[in-house]
Structure formats: C-alpha cells, structure tokens
Image 1 (cartoon, rainbow, N blue to C red):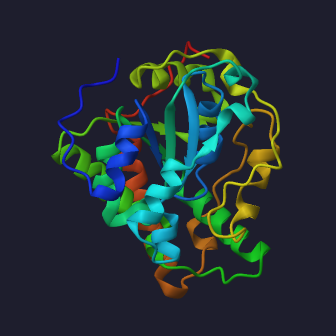
Image 2 (cartoon, rainbow, N blue to C red; image 1 turned 180 degrees about the horizontal axis):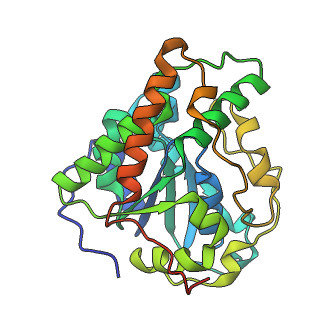
Length: 279
C-alpha cells in the first residue's frame, strides 16, 4: 500500500476543480527522453486509470501560459477508454499525469499537492537521454544546443530533495529495469501506488492517431515510436562516451554533473531494484 501523504496545502483556485474532479491522481516525473511515455503507456492499460494528461505544465514553460491553461488540460485529459479495450466497461475515474522537471519547475509543489499516491521518478543514463534529445532536435532541423536546465537532472535532484524535506512519498525506478525486466519491477511499483498489477499491462494496441502534444504538433515527432508500439521494448542502446558530447555551452561539463546526480539517485533506498530471481 502507498505511504500516507502529508496533508495537502491549499491549491490555487484554478486547480481546486482538478483535485475535486478525480478520486485518485498519479504522477510520473522524468527528465526528457527517459522513456517516461512508455511507462505511462503501461498505466494506460490499467482498469483503474481512466484518464491521462500529458505534460500539462509544458505550456507554462514554452508558451508562458497561466494556471488556467494547466487546469483546462487537467480537466480535459485523454480518455483512455477510447484506446484500451480493458476500460470499455470500467467505471474508473483516476487520472495519470506525466511531467518533466524543467516544465513543471516552480509549480512542482502544485503537482505534489494534486498527487494522491507516491510520485514516480524515472531515471535513465544521462548520456542516453541527452544523446537522444540531441538526435530528436536534429531530426526536425532544430539546434542541438538547448538550455542546460532542459536535461532535467539538476531540477530532478532538487525535486527529490524537496520531497525528502516535506515528507512527500515517492518511488524511483530505472527505465532500463522497466524495459528489460518489467515483471521484476512493475508489480512492486504498482503495489506501492496501491494498484494491482497484471502481466497484460505491458502489451497494448498501437494508437498512432492519438495526439498528446500540447504545442500544436511541434513535439509530435517525439511520441511517434511509443504510440506506434505494441508493448515495452528492451533498452539496447549503449551510452556514448562523455567525450563524444560537444563542449559548446558547457554541455559536456554539465553532463558530468548529470551523471553524478544519476548515480546518487540510482543508489537511493527509494529505488525499486529488481530481484535477480524475479522477472
């Protein structure tokens, strides 16, 4: 069962309707390109989770939108009954929210106040997630150089620290464990969230026609692979050497710090480590 959460602080009026709308709200927070949408896709299949809101704070970061816009997205989420046949006859009303550290930013306490179960922090080797982000930038003709806060790692560290200071329950999982040994980590993850786990959750029907980007299609290319998938795919990529990353803008030096944070969080007692005898 999930740990008891401390009393939720007052929410801005814009978000009070969100708290009132859903009996349970689950949240995943992850740096970009850490396979967080694939993990969310597992949750889409759960019969207790009826709705999904993809990065609602994205518009505050990229478009300087207001909390009214965030609330609107949370109140108009993707209805999962349109995608998962397991939800066809369900009376579920729970919401899953996925976010990135730099997008939620200063609004992180609002997200923790909305969540009714331990937050899920997802990790991936920073060399892989940064290399993937550079690749995706180049795919659409964007500059491969971006603000260093958008790697997500330093803010993720601060957000985990904030949870520790405020006694906010959370759990840490590694994307390679989720993808390569799902049956060794997902049952415990779901159990900590107070959800039953079923092996059928790790496979699904492709849904290429679903749109989850909030920026008018600017980021649609980031989700094509997972939306076209039919289940979790193993992590086979090898992390490139740090020396392969550019020094421009301090990226290589920053990546070294990201790796330090990654190692610290990977060894956290809050991380679910797969048993060698499971899955």
